[in-house]
Length: 151
Image (cartoon, rainbow, N blue to C red):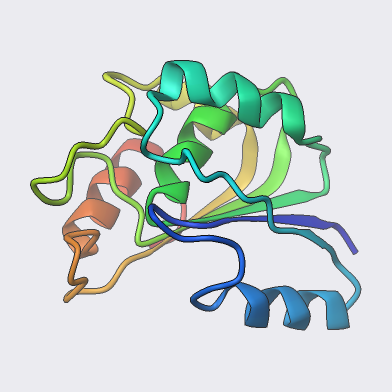
């Protein structure tokens, strides 16, 4: 089995939401799971935050990336800047534009969509129709329209 990296969302940490449950399930079927903690996620601008993330993690062809909320646009930036094509990227409650009135320093001004697309064998977007923070199906559709994959 491969390596899975689960990126928490804005204002969260690796030990909340469904992250521990998913990690346990994946470990039980043989994956190696990493749940890094980035307290400055969506606080520090992506231009200075991303190099720290890239330096702290190793990406291999069997890597599966899972990003939730603010962790999803982080995945876009990671995929745009790594040299290794990963197995899969799953964006849960991801967004491309500010989903509410809060500041979103995790978002880039523009993205290199072809580079992002070329660095993942599979892209999956999971968004609900009633996300309380605005990371809804419309946001998922915008990502899908840019990248293809599964919605």
